[in-house]
Image 1 (spheres, one colour):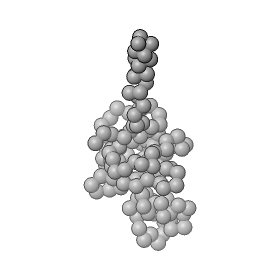
Image 2 (spheres, helix red, strand yellow):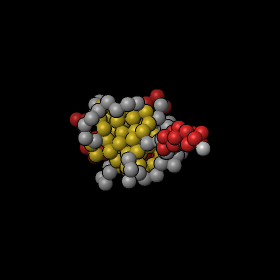
Image 3 (cartoon, helix red, strand yellow):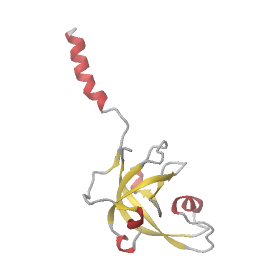
Image 4 (cartoon, rainbow, N blue to C red):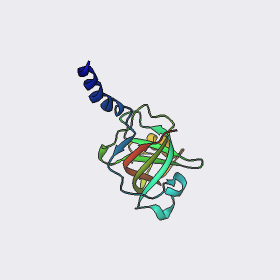
Length: 145
């Protein structure tokens, strides 16, 4: 009986940490209050590291290389630095906080993966090149609802 009790005491703490993973990527670098998606795409945040809070809107169906997050007004495409973060394909419309660098990308109708940009950046019917804000994220945290 003592052996069973010892085994249970050893295994119980291990099993409590076996839940779904909620933090992906690197350790947190920023301690600032997260910006909304609408705040993050303002010009003053370009080429800066920021924290952004939004709700998952779409996820790359192929290999999870991007997700789109939104607030009530805007959508932001998130690309993951060096492929170190692969979000779960089952990630639904949940709130998340991301850390990364805001950049501008030029896309055009003949760009590789243009249809993905249409889905993830709320751009449609483009006939010429345009610049869209994108976050290159190094950390993602799924929040409890």
